[in-house]
Structure formats: structure tokens, C-alpha cells
Image 1 (cartoon, rainbow, N blue to C red):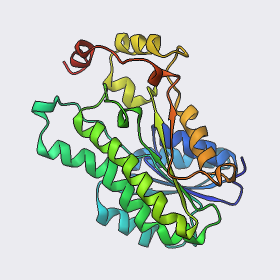
Image 2 (spheres, rainbow, N blue to C red):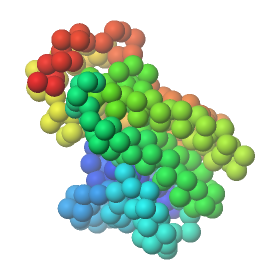
Image 3 (tube, helix red, strand yellow):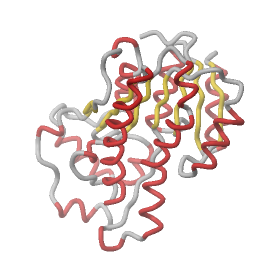
Length: 262
């Protein structure tokens, strides 16, 4: 894959899958637009990229806010003539059980994990139309097709909605040559995952995966860049499972699901 002279905009770029995707794209020659709300992490990222000779523009934004996204695109990205690939990777995890999930928690998770992806794609549409790559990839989850053991009902609902958004956007935007796809990662060992799940539970998850291990963020990043590259020029409206074969078997017990929240 060659992203030389391409512009790749990535939300949630300062950590996890977003950061891995930013690194992978930069190594392939891309100018990365890193969108994240963590200013400290963005500064660290900017320094790391500069040390490696990679191009990055850091943009502070709250993906859960339509106004913040619009400001970022119209102001912080005003100097960009085009975007070749948009990666919607920003996400947060809910922890409550169904009966205890609050309205605020529900709204916040959906605003970041679902609505934010819609508004980013909508606001960057003129830039994507002007680009040569003309692709967007939404980071959903295996939970979109099953349930989340790390997150709660709002996380599962948001990720399932993201697949619907992917299909509908792909259908409409095909008329202007823009492809929209999604990836559905299984268990990815990110810093957020390590904080959310105890070590013993992580070991049990690895034993459940047919390929015997958690995914790394880079495993997902490589799939994202494939879908955003010319190699996938006739692929749109799809979701790619990246799960080590976990979707081939049944999940953990409900007891372990409850224990992870205690």
C-alpha cells in the first residue's frame, strides 16, 4: 500500500487503534490529521512523529460535539484542500448494566461512538470529494453483531448503529465516488482495554480466541488502510471482521460478563 502524498484524517488518533493507524499511514507516506480531545496525548504524538520524520497535524476536537467537529473542520483544517481517507476511530466504553445505565451515559456513548462518525463524515464530505482516495472507514466492533463484554448496552447499540450508518452512507455516496466501509475488531489489547478488564479475564479471553491471542492495534490498522487503499477500490458498504476467529464460537458466560463490572 502506498499513501505517499495522501491526507489521512483519523479521529481518536492519540491512542489505541487510532494511533496505530496514524503510525501505519505515516510510515506509508501519508500526512496524518490527528483529531483527538486529549491535548497532552496529541502533543506527545506530535513530538514522536516529528522525531521519526512523519507528517502530522494535531487537531483538538470533542467528537461527541457536532459544534466542535464543525469548528475543527472549518478552522483547524481550513488549509487542507482535500482528505483522501477518513478513519472514524474515536470511541468510549460504557460500564453499567442495562438496568443501571443512566440517560447521560447512554447519550454520551452514542454521541461519540455513533453521532460523531456521522458528523465527521458529513463535515468532511467536501474534502473527501476533492481527494483522490475518496474513502472512509468506520471502526465498529464485533459487539455490533453480538454483544460487548467490555462495554454496556449503549456501546453495543452505538456500534450496531455504526454498521447501519456505514451501509447507508456507502449507498448514497457511491454516486460521488466515495467508498464507506467498517471494520469490526474482536478483542484488541489497547490501554483502554487493559484498564477495563482484569488480567485474569484477559488471559481467559485469549484462550477463547481460536488463533490464541488478542489482536494488537496494528492488526486493525493494517485492515483499515487496506479498505482505504486503491486495492479495495470496488469494496463499499461492507464490514470486515478482525477477530482471530472469535466470531466462529460462542462467547463467555454471563457470570464472567457480570464479574467484569464488579
